[in-house]
Length: 423
Ligand code: EPU
Image (tube, rainbow, N blue to C red; front, side):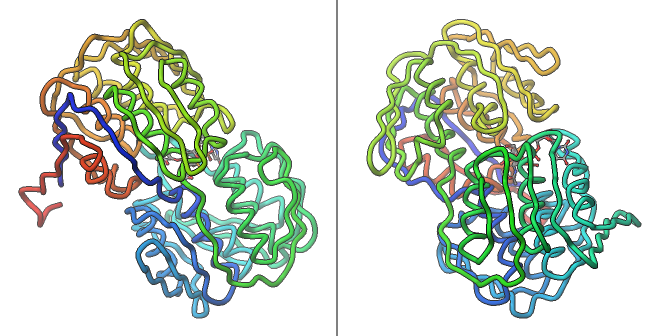
C-alpha cells in the first residue's frame, strides 16, 4: 500500500477550496434510488467512499457517470435490491440504501455490516425504526432481508440521535403511506442537505435540522439536480493543520455556521478566525494553548474532528482533557501519536493530553479516516519525516489531501507501494 512521507516544520499558507461533504454525498447518492430517472449531484468529492457508493448503485442496476465532480445517476434500470458483503465490508455506510429500497420496492437485502476501527457500530436503531413502519426482517447467512408489503408511517423515537438511523428512516418515510415522526433525530447539516434534496424530489418534510422531523409520505419522486453542502469536517481538518504549523489558510466555501463550536475551540487555543463572504480564514501565530473538549452529536463538537484536535493538543501549552462520547473505540490512534512523542493517557472515554514542546517523526499507521488525517497533521509539526502507512483510509475521506497540502507549502509526498500487485 502507498505511504505518505510528511516532513515537519513548514508553515501552511494560501487558499484551499473545501469540497462537498462526504457524509452528505453518500446519502444523496442513495436517495437517487427513490426516483426513476437521471439525478445529477454536483460537488461530489472524488474519494474512495464515493466510488464505493457508486459501485453499490451500479450493483443495484443504476448507471453512474462522473464528469469532474458532478455525478449523474440514472436509475431507470435499477431493479436490484441486494447489496453484497464485498461492498458493505469496504464501507458500512452502504447500508443507507435500505431506506430508499424499502420505499421504492418494498424489499431490500444487505449484508450485515461488522464492527470497524472506531467501534462495534450497531444498526439496531435503523432496524427498530423500520420495524415500526411495518418492515419485517429476517437474517440468514450474514444477510439481512427486509420486506414491507405495506410500508406505513410511524412514530419513531430514537434512543440516540444516530445520523445513519435518522437518514435511513427519513428515506423510507418519504415513500411510506401516512405520516412519520422521527423524535430525537440527528441534526447534522448533512441531514438538512439530504432533506433539502428529498424535498426538491417531491418529498414533504418539516423540521429537518431539529430534533423532531415530520414526514408526510408520497409515492412519486422526480430526479433532480442538487449541489452537495461543503464538508465541515474537511474544513475543520485544514483549519487544524493551519494551526499546528503556525500558518494561515483561507478555506474557500467553508461554512462557519456549521463549525460554531470547532471555531470557538480553535479560538480558545489561540487561533485568529475571520469569517468572510466566500469562506473563512484561520491563522495561528503561537504555540496552541490547551483546551478541553467533549464530542457530542451536532451541534456538539464533532467526533470526526476529535483525532485532529488531539494532534493539535499534543503540542499545546498545558494539559487538555478530551472526552469521546460518540464512538467507543475512537482513541485507538492515541498509541500512534504517543509513538511520535506525544504524552497522552486514556481512561475509558477520557484522554488526558500533556502538551509536549515537540513531536518527533516516526513510522505510524492511519487507523481510520480521521485518525489518518490526525497523523498527517501531527507529521506537519514533527521533527523529521513521518512515514504514514495504511493511507487508503485517508483516501476514503479526503480528495487529493497530500497534493492540496503540498500546494499550501507542506513537505508531503506519496510513496507508491513497492509491491503494487499486492496493494
Ligand atoms: N449506534 C447504535 N445503534 C445504531 C446506530 C448507531 O448503537 O443503530 C451508535 C453507534 O455505534 C455510535 C453512535 O451511535 O456509537 C453514533 O452513530 P451514528 O449512527 O450517529 O453514526 P453513523 O451514521 O454510523 C456518521 C458518519 C460518521 C460520523 C458519525 C457521527 C457517515 C457515512 N458516517 O456515522 O463519519 O462519525 O455519523 O457524526 O455519515 C467519518 O466520516 O470518518 C465518520 C466515521
